[in-house]
View 1 (cartoon, rainbow, N blue to C red):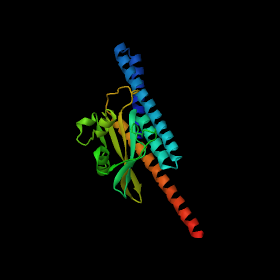
View 2: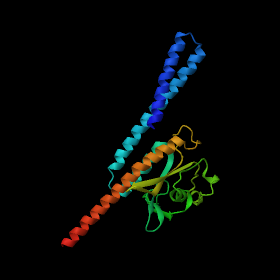
View 3: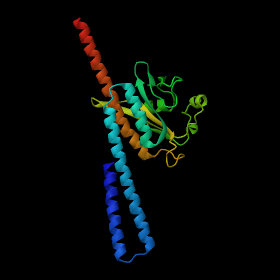
View 4: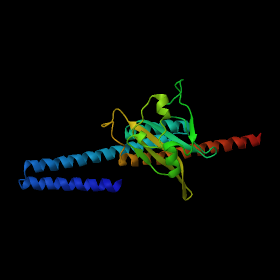
Length: 239
């Protein structure tokens, strides 16, 4: 966040000053090398934070342009994958009428005709159901170590699920908040630096931030659909 970034900037400045003083005082080359390495590492972290913030901003702008829910699904999972270097991602939303969770885009589980299909599950089922019902984030290094994981999809698809990170989507309106869905990422992408590494706390925070933008886009679609329906109803009454 901004406080962490400011702290990191201050540390970089202090290390730079220390390097300058040690150079003047004739410090050993090993000491200077260590301090220089620390400074470069912190500078790299600042660059990554800045790039990630810019990426989140761009994702938010793109999501805000979507007027159809199907477009939000597609954009959201693409953004989630890129943001945390995940192999797959799925956006789940709550259907309050049927008490189910549904997704219209589930990467790796599209129909035989090449088109994505809608998938529905009971609201309390599996890891995503646990996240939605509890409001708690779920993260694991190997899904098979969790009794909440249902391996039936892996068995039918031949895919091997390992790392999972799933965060709830929260809508805050009129002074109250409720869980409206969840965004879930699975496994590290092959392009990731370490494909066996668990998703980090920093990546969890990024996914939560993206989730806030997704909720805004979903609510925009609902509002637009509602307005369109009201307009249609008014036209029907005039006839």
